View 1: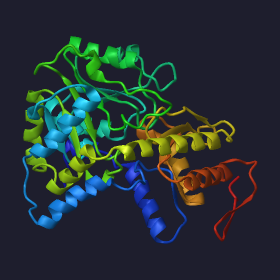
View 2 (view 1 turned 60 degrees about the vertical axis):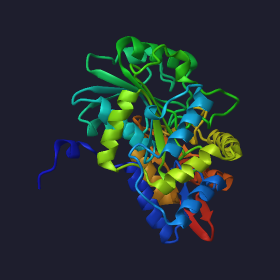
View 3 (view 1 turned 45 degrees about the vertical axis):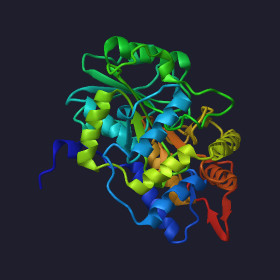
Length: 405
């Protein structure tokens, strides 16, 4: 069997594999605690459900324009005006089947084989594979100062004549770090000066804690016409807890959006009309659910940070947003994949190995679940790893005896 070079270069997702394994165990009745997911437990907004149910009962479920319905585009334009202070025309925006597809078609519209894509590390797991799917080269950049706050000099040291695009995700998955306004300003100005594309992955930009403010890249742009190479992507998955609806969008120059639309038209023919209806309902509807989710996640973060403080040698940067904590467990095992599999096998707690995000020895822990999930999950992890913990642990009626320390 002959497989393409690109096909051979794309690795299996360890995160999806672990999720699948956990789902199988849970279906068998195992007491799984899921600290690995990126999926809020909030219910979808009622305005979203009302929007799609009205269309669904009509029976008029048809094709839409490949870049989104007019109504969907108006909702995106309204959103961009409200949160970015930038007025766009319909030709400047595209609706996609999730923010992931919006980023993917943007990269396909921009990149040639052997071009380089720069992004700070740790990074969202799909960035390197997306670059590879375009025949391009991913260039992760780990801050030299050991923090998760990249500096412009970190970026500059990795720029070459092949560099085509920089991707920023802030607040960041997996670290929860919010990049500073000064850093974003420097990157925007550098990209405009050098003629590089900048993709701002803003999927978590309304889930920020401690009164900190989101950074608006348009505050620092000087190119406003069709020569702009700034692309902002977003979606309904995180802020509205609508992960299964798979609606995202991108805003950019008319030229690049037109090319993205052409590509998307041949891939999926555009997002489903009923899902667009739901997204329109969420964007235009009551927004109190977003703030409620943000407050819940902030409280969950506080609880998780308090519990992690009880570990000897574990270090975790306090997240500024998102619903993740990226914790250094290398004192117990520098092989994060091995450690993650061990915790799932021994105490039925699902975590995500840091190596998938570009940094081994770390685990990404999700704060999406309940307080009970967080406290019990961390308690199980501590019991499994800490030699000073009691030798026995009860999970429901089941008694576990530790025989590996």
